[in-house]
Figure (tube, rainbow, N blue to C red):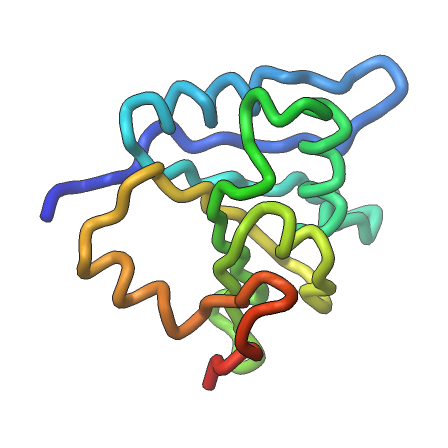
Length: 140
């Protein structure tokens, strides 16, 4: 299997005068090349401000209300508190993950490539959050 990540993207905390769509354009470019995108979420630790995955997903939909860059059915992963004992991960549709609370920071997103190698699919399965109305969350 080869390296499947495209350009890494940073999603900044928006201000009234700064709400860029360039991160969405980079995600779309990576997806068009069938590559995953690591999305780093902005933080200002000196101010105690950390962009949460929940807020980031809401911001993406606000900037892309028609789903031109990311559809509700596209799959993503959210990782939280990597490197800590309480680290956790979730994989699911954009729509499903938008409904979840990922707990304390820090968070990052991975927008998955449109197609996955069978080994990638198997590795992600343990973190899968089923869409509502399907079988329950069976993560360990």
